Length: 49
View 1 (cartoon, rainbow, N blue to C red):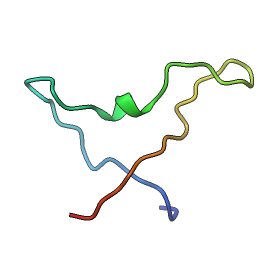
View 2: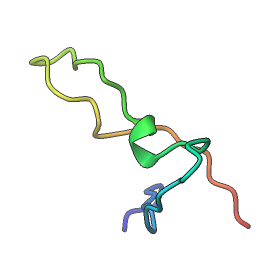
View 3: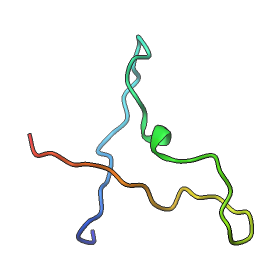
View 4: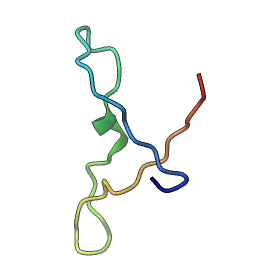
């Protein structure tokens, strides 16, 4: 894993629907190069627990 990379350690169902999923980090917009997907990078804040 490269420094600065974040990996989700698992995905769990949220029964009440109040939490965000990993997919909420991605935009539904199209890229400026070829109108492709823009899900290759996302900015996140990581805090050690």
